[in-house]
Length: 363
Image (cartoon, rainbow, N blue to C red):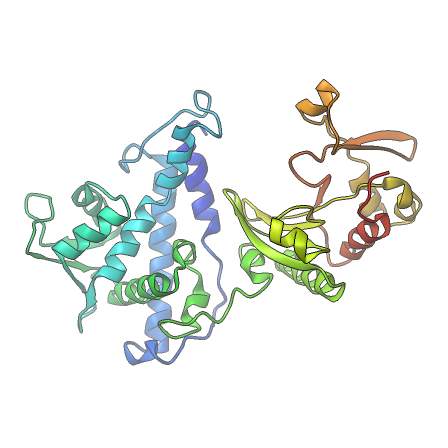
């Protein structure tokens, strides 16, 4: 992988949510198509999105997207940030087409050119005609362009002859996402968008915000159990969003939550992989407990890291050092909590217990 756009388009593809064979669809959408037609259209649209993200990964220049070398530009460089945003380019185009157009009876989108141009300007989409031409590679046809460009006071018709239900689903998901401010759910083709009516969201109240991105059913179950356990122990929480994915942070005090500081736990989707972060400030209180944990848990506490620049300069105040099984271990805590694991349904409680036993005061 050489370019930043490749890195982020790979993540966009991984974030396309898996979905069950059957899922609920609100009755308001069944007035447009049958349940099976909507399901067929959703399957087709999912395939189109997957192919599009894959083509960005394999040929970003051919997809008219900027290429910035990862060795030349660091993670925080404006070019790297621009690449991250550009990885959403085609999702934005599908989005604006879907919610700007009126759905016709024959499963096409009729879009007023002036409205489309206005919405593209809002989303910072330029040269739309060229991108519409590329969509033809996926079987999507845009009629009404003049010399490859959008002409004012005209109409654009967007169709997908292979399966008109795909356009219907595109319209439904785009309008629903636009009405409820759920753009990233649209990019990920979150099937839960079908659950409520045009203006209602009936999900995203808990751990599913993160766990729906996991590919492993065991990871989803473990995350749910962790969330329920922390709520039972009176932790409060809020939602965060990294470049690499969403997360939930858990706090002992509401004041800490309001300031977004001193979170004891982070439940995260890191590139769609389950990572559970936790902070321990006083290992002396829990060493004996850890020694009696299952071997898989002990192994995670045996991992040392190099620390960051603060450790090298001698100014680190967040890292911790401890001895376990005759090994001296250092865990950095400057940027993230000291520990990160991928817990199973069998061992998640040991980590939560260790944090609670240690308390929140450093030795």
